[in-house]
Image (cartoon, rainbow, N blue to C red; front, side, top):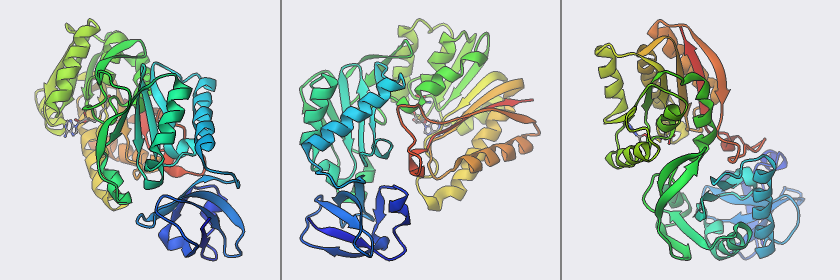
Length: 390
Ligand code: SAH
């Protein structure tokens, strides 16, 4: 087996059990190796640190899968996926729709597996994982008791690994759009054409967390997609819910979902740019008791943090302006690069500009089936602040 020698003094991250080894930390690669092969990572004195797969074309050159000297084979993946399943079982997160494997949060760097009823959706976002698709699919079929597995490898992040885009059946053939349950509500899920792998499963617990603020409320759900927050608000007793999204196809499904759950009389949707719609609602003097803001990632990389800060501040400022006195803002950011402290600072900034006092009721993260691995900051990406605005 080839091995990767880290530069002297550059082994701190590996010793702290962070699985990414960057090209700049590597002193030498010793031995024959092909992209995707399993290699050892050692320090400058050749002491073992970890074992994982290599991709010399990626700036994350090695992704460590094990901190022990064990074979990384079919049995290894089987056991790791079983451990991921057992973890969710242990914390009570095994809902009809949930994330079965969350990449570095499950020590399976670059592997994502989502489950929607009896359909699984898999993403292998790095080369070393991609070439092992067959063993992953075999393990999933066995462990999850389903042979319906679809791959959504059309993510652009694969380009960083020199991988192309691809999607389709990897096991079985089945309808790719169907009704699925989240928190007892029905959602139309399209695993082939939906955003992400179908639903934003990372918001499942945040969808539930709005319950105390909904009864009798007038609610605005900005960036609503297929109505995740909007439908929950209606189920929790909202008097009126308006959802806003720029995607016509998402709203088509959102309307179908509202009808299916019996909320068509209270829930409506507006197609448009949320920034513009919020401004228009403000100028028309419309007020809401609960406003939800769940935009796409504004900061795709470190370089974009400043622009993202301005975008988040702008949209939150507009949301605060249309809140009724003592209204609640539920506001999210799924950009890893917008760290929680910066996110809260941005909200304080927005409140000051809006001339409102804001209290942080709760600061939440992604659902627990997207585990945050301590020491791997990147696994903590979603922020969801619940704020009461005077
Ligand atoms: N809140 C949703 C997930 C939102 S994902 C849920 O809980 O399920 C972000 C959404 O923002 C996507 O549906 C995308 O279509 C939409 N979007 C992106 N830019 C937008 C904009 N400028 N105005 C309105 N919607 C936008």
